[in-house]
Amino acid sequence: MPSRTLRSIRALTVTGLLTGLTVLASPAAPAAPAPAHAAAQDAASAIPSVGTDFGEPGPYAVSVDIEAVHTFYHPTDMGRSGERHPVVIWGNGTGAVPGVYSGLLRHLASHGFIVAAANTPTSNFAITMRAGIDVLEKRNADSGSAYYQKVDLDHIASAGHSQGGAAAINAAIDPRVDTAVPIQPGPLADADTMDEPVFYLAGQRDLIVLPFLVKAFYNDSDHVPAVYGEVRGAGHLSSIADGGAFRAPVTAWLRYWLMGDANARGMFFGPDCGYCTDTALWSDWKRNAKAEQLG
Image 1 (tube, rainbow, N blue to C red):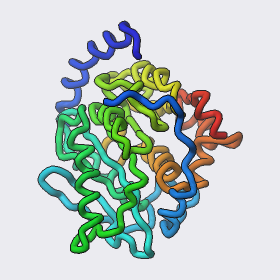
Image 2 (image 1 turned 90 degrees about the vertical axis):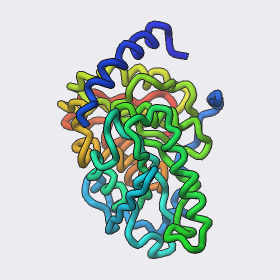
Image 3 (image 1 turned 30 degrees about the horizontal axis):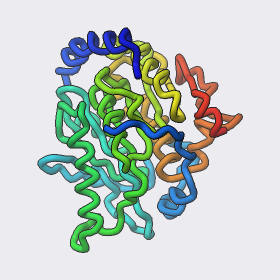
Image 4 (image 1 turned 45 degrees about the horizontal axis):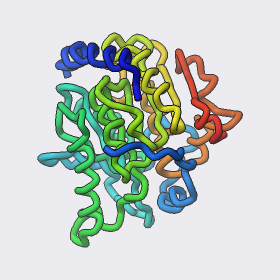
């Protein structure tokens, strides 16, 4: 569990986190998860490769369904070649709504993901995020739904920014979640509750969620494969809108863990790890021992 000092630091950060963004349990399993497996590749076998152009738009046109509780970003022609689409549940930063991140969430949908974004500016406990999975489970089973048998419910990620980044960690207690991407996560979460691979993203010049706080989550995640990437020159709001420099690595991580994309895997793991030596993108980069083992 995090140290008393770390808990105190996180608690003191809450006030600054909430103020700065107005502009806009079960115990962990002891065993580390295996790498993305053949099932991910099989489920998404008809989703086209993008090579390593993860920051560029994907091959799908995108539709957006704004509903009372969630906003769904998805390929317009879901399942056009018999594929099923992996799911990303999304949490917003404090005071924000999905539209603040519309460019990034549209980008993910263009790569073949179905994004269930919670329509809440207070996502920390991930209740609405996890409910997005429930909605998609029902629609995937409903023969009258556009989602019918087109949702890959075996491959789900939680992701979010700031308070939503903490929510991405909290959502990972759900056994249906396979990986998490906390982007500049707020302090109200406990990495020890996770048993999924995780990609932490920080901003070098973030004055709201300081990089060392994100790194503390990473250090607490030594029981799972964990990667820490600190985007050079990025502030706290650099990841909103279209995701900026965060967009490509987020997409690559999700394509590997949810689609089994071999090109995406090579950006994070193995001796030729593409991101590991990219000092133009990262001011700091770390992989823990369990992530190193995946190479």
